[in-house]
Length: 281
Ligand SMILES: C[S@@+](CC[C@H](N)C(=O)[O-])C[C@H]1O[C@@H](n2cnc3c(N)ncnc32)[C@H](O)[C@@H]1O
Image 1 (cartoon, rainbow, N blue to C red):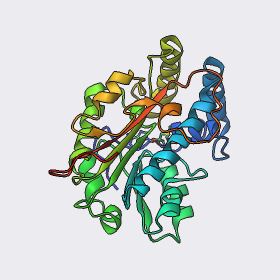
Image 2 (image 1 turned 60 degrees about the horizontal axis):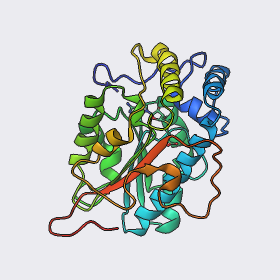
Image 3 (image 1 turned 135 degrees about the horizontal axis):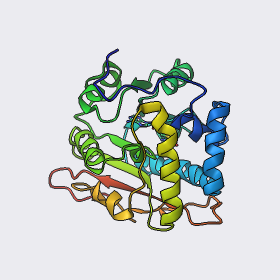
Image 4 (image 1 turned 90 degrees about the vertical axis):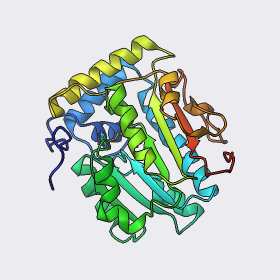
């Protein structure tokens, strides 16, 4: 498969730290190598709360997907899926409504291979290997076309992935291009680390991730934004309550919050207004 110039997938090299495998390690997974563990440990030394942040990110994902399936959404497009972990989008959505269809998109071929292996027998879930900046490629992909009708409301999910695009204009464009392809009544969810709470820690972590992923992609990657910048990504969407909030404060349920230090990541859900109908909350 040919990828647009500059959007080539990360090469597989177990000696070089990789975003999805580092994230897997932070979540307590087993799909990682020594280089990933070493890089993740360096990050944990700078911010011991990182594993909790990753887990709170997954809990946010659970609450959002349950909310969306409960609101009647039956199509999910999960951008920047990551390596399979317990409670993936299709499992959560299909537990609410078994007819939910889920398309996973990730640019990392290793994620694609793992996901394909666990999804082989699931006719309602599939994987597309693509860069999130290639909206046309994603929307036109035969795997997506088989499961998702873009004329119907769809949940567009960006969980802890937009920070991998450092340029603000490029991230806004990527979100807007995919968002524009969604039908009225669709929802968009974003979670994103932010610098508002502890700017020094987050700057050091962003620098570390830039250094590590620089080796993989030949360009500096990763950026933490401010909460206001994340809010702006929802331009044109009606935010559901409570708006863009710190993850642990977005419609918390009765799960224990593990954080001893503040969790410096925010999340929100927006709805694309259906003509003439108010935002659903
Ligand atoms: C930190 S993980 C997040 C995983 C999961 N969404 C979660 O919240 O637990 C980020 C994922 O985004 C993927 N990714 C990074 N840049 C991407 C891009 N430009 N297009 C698509 N996927 C990307 C990485 O390969 C990785 O699997």
